Image (cartoon, rainbow, N blue to C red; front, side):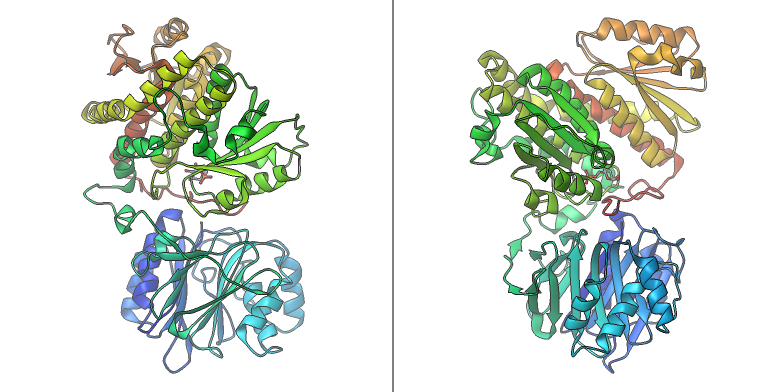
Length: 611
Ligand code: G6P
């Protein structure tokens, strides 16, 4: 989704802004632009459709000197990707705005501004903000006051940054519903949609809160005002992951790097959260023990890959903690008349902690009498974390590839910890707890062994590159893993893929099976294995080509039309985590063979900050 960078520095800011945009590329976008106030006090702008490299080329031909500027990557919502729709948007020659989010009342505002004589050049909702601020600038003494008055007219969600030739050396930023952080430098100050955009210049950040307005000015001055307009002090936090997290290292793609980080990040997600024979309930916060002992139901809400993690957790929580669980995608949940039974724990899952629907679902839930809210999230300081009662960080480090990999397996790890924590306060047998704890400790090693199978998985991928469809099958807690495998393949290779619980095969999808439809199945060593084997026979009997990822102990062997990859034996409860890996690698290699943009697949965004 749209990315924002801003800088007020003691040097030319073009290079800082451009590097910031490159670092935001992972969020997904279709055009980019920059506006800088020149040493002579003139506002100048460059914009380009396509990648940040196209903007860089444009700046190469016509640089933007100046010490104060804003820049943006746009993910089209209102109006197709084009240079005129790209941000920054200007009002006249003197004022420019970049925006992430959606201004819901833009049509009414546009009519009003047109009637007032303002000319619109783009189809975007953002342009109204530029004109509104410009109109207010004429009525007030400075840019800060003008922005504040303009904000009062906006409905919807936004993170904004505004510069004006009349206020050189000043950027005014604001956030409501979309993320924005301030980077604190030495004698310099920056704005970014996330810290990663600014790690080349600082590791100290202020995470703005809902309704905050910020003014950055020369000398690195940062003034924050809350929604009521009162000056407030916000804590400066140090980013812990280091700048290396935002680079590919020796890997060809971020996605491949992130797949290979999984043994280390799963270990990090477990670090300090396991006792000898049980999970440490206090990992979820000091109040967790008292709250968890009251939990009688769990509602889990998330989007995309995170939703699939929630679906796996349902099997675990019901089986080991004995609590009824509902799992739902946030965009549906938030518009439903939800019935909340007494003592229900509300759980959100999110890599970014900024997904608009998940955040809206949390806010909706907070009004509905839940016992408490728990966020399982990867980004410290994100909105979801700040607005939840309890949180557990997944410790995966920054995830840059749009297709989520390590965030998913660490979410699953965290959800197994939640299962054990709830199980512990609800009398899960001590033996079972100890067994699962031991299995969790061994998980990073097993993940490493699966990653070592990469050459064999790469060899399998050749069978998919020419195909247009694929079917994924799984049973029980592996049905969501099949869904996740299908999603990965769709996202990065653009091959249409569907997932079914294997038992549903006969109820429709079997009609699609022929030699052109590869069928991928995850077959761990669990109680549903025999049933799954019969489902696989049904596929073979129709000439379908089968690809089976199976436990080395289950006795499924290669035969004509059946390719088998054996995975190390794992405690069957943890198999969903392990079986995710070959599906990630398979999608990755298929996408590489097809030559798609693996890390930034077309039309998709990493962090979906609009509804
Ligand atoms: C986008 C991303 C997915 C992600 C989903 C939910 O669609 O492309 O990879 O799973 O958003 O994001 P979240 O940050 O809430 O986990």
